[in-house]
Length: 288
Length: 180
Image 1 (cartoon, rainbow over the protein chains, first blue to last red):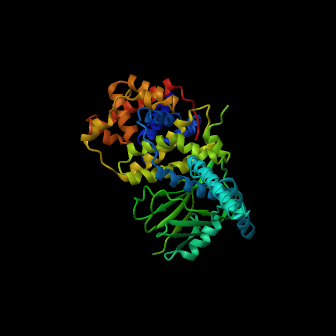
Image 2: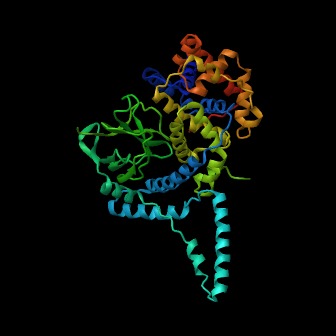
Image 3: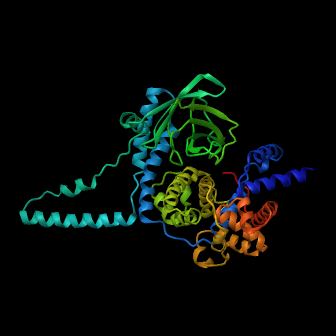
């Protein structure tokens, strides 16, 4: 009997990796996971499918323009990610600490666009230095500081708080909705603000329980008119370090249009593609 | 020993992001191009995938799988999500384009993943119908119903071939159980 159930669980795990599961199958898998917890987090089947996936893949180079876009994205991502992870709860203090964290990140992650470019820059500076020297000799002046000034190019990305304030100040189509506890609609948990035109938004929470980041993540879902209710847009995962106020940027995977509802679920670490919605922790209905 | 790129990213090494793009940019881009015919969609997907890779970098364990396989796994999750949401249709005429012999260009393209090289070999050792179903599912993200329509096999048979084929390859690859 146990062997049959284990075999059935393997079937479901395989189907999940290759085809996805429907609601009934997901429920069945959840029940079987209780019997075989050792298989719950096994992703060896997914790794196998992935290895097969590029086993016969003719590799095309990544286009240059896309590489540049991703490098720019990296700068923003690492600044935002670090700040979000560090976000503590007390309002004024936390915002100051976020800015400080961003400053730190900006020092750590000032991404060079490409090595060949920086190599070229070196030669350019050398050329500039030669020109400056020749000019100085010709005019009998000695002012080599020009080259030094060229090197000092500060790179600064706005902090999450700055980005939030900028959105509030600049977005002409800014919308807001209030987070409530789905089990008690009188309990408010914060608000979500967004701009469809800018495809940006932020979630503010107060009183959301801290998660164990090693085991689980919070995940945002956006229900809008572009997607079926069964497959809302993944709005990104995030952690809450303390019980208190946090400010999280929305990280929507797809372009959203006329959101009707925002929902936050607690999921396994790393998030999920489709939520079973068993652990719904906050919802924000958009008033029409 | 040289540290894995993903480990360096997790530690905040700024040069590792460029190294990641140089090493795996082509892999991720090629996976996206194969599964998403629209070039703009593929570009958006690749951007999202690299963010996912950075987010998950600390979860990579080189004792469990190669870095390339881990990157391919993160890529696959995102691409399948997009394919399923787009509800695209695949015509029977494209079947020949999808199904290619696993040994083609093997040497040329197999420099980045130990498991991939072995997976290609194991795939070629499967029964033809098992191989066909796995290729349609994994290369194109087709559902069992779509594979059934394309091949004429009953849905149950499609699932059986897919399960047996995948489990056999996993066993032969000796991939360890990991959580991510």
